[in-house]
Image 1 (cartoon, helix red, strand yellow):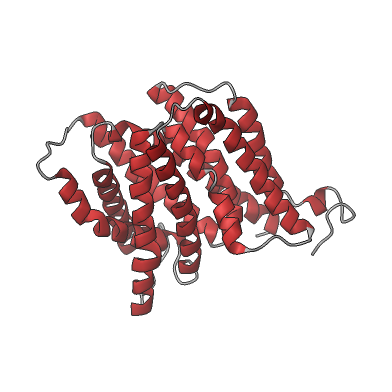
Image 2 (cartoon, rainbow, N blue to C red; image 1 turned 90 degrees about the vertical axis):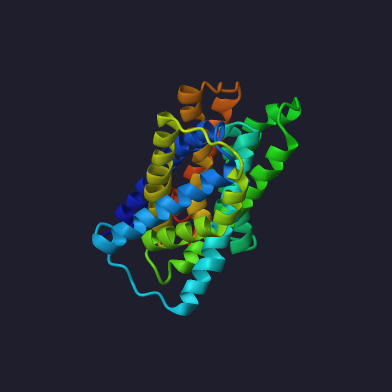
Amino acid sequence: MSGTKSNGIITSWLMLAVFLWGASNAGSKFVLASWPPIWVGTTRFLCAGLLMLAILRWTTWLGVPKPIKPALKRDLWLRGGLSLAIYIVAFNWAMQLTSASHVALYLGASPVWALLWEERPSRNWRSAQRYGATLLALSGVVVLVWPSLKFGNTRLGGEMLGLTASIMWANYGRQGRVLAASLTGAEVSAHTMWRAGLLLLPLALIEIFGRELVWRADLVLVQTYCFVGGGVCAYALWNNALMHWPTSRVFLFNNLIPLSTMSWAYFCLNEPFTKTFLEAMVLIVSGVVLGQVKWEKVMGRWWAPMD
């Protein structure tokens, strides 16, 4: 398979994951209006992780599972499960405190943390391209979120939790890349999700103790989609991409999740578009394009010399 074709396939994986996560984020906002946040995250990860394990065990759809050594099991708990558990708690609480699209904007900042962890700026074209793409995409996030911050119609707790979720999502991506050296993307997703769910289970039981949960068909159906579409499918696609690309390059696609989330929230939850949406969309998409295009091939070596 050629490098160009391979990159195109990976890009399509990530775009599909973005689409699925946008719907899942809007679905999370809907479910969290009736169910407590840790309970939602716990049940979702337990169901998604166990479903993926069953698929790995009894089919070859996601490949053939490998034996897991004790050292790797420990890493799956500490590197994957724990970071994913902290992420989902921060994400769901933020989603409950503010709008779905607003929380997704903070996830769009994840490439900044991933890039800072990966490397320091260097005096070469590759570094300038990657940092420029990240800053350009981040500027779109700032443009989109600025009116809400300016007029003070968001809650500080939701903002801080959204920022925490963003950092923890970047951390999970880094840990997933380490784990992907020994496991497939599907295996990383399955093993980290059920572990995250199990770690959170005691907190979830405390959260619902003495509380009557609302059971409706629409809540159950949306939650089911979230752990199948936003859990099993999207996480498998995402972790597979992390096996082939650096974390910061994969995380540039995080900048498209706010656009996907906002679109789903607009049509399904009646959350309005902001006046600055189109400006932010141009900046965010431009950042993704800048980060993905190999300009030395498009413009010639005189424009972007090889390192």
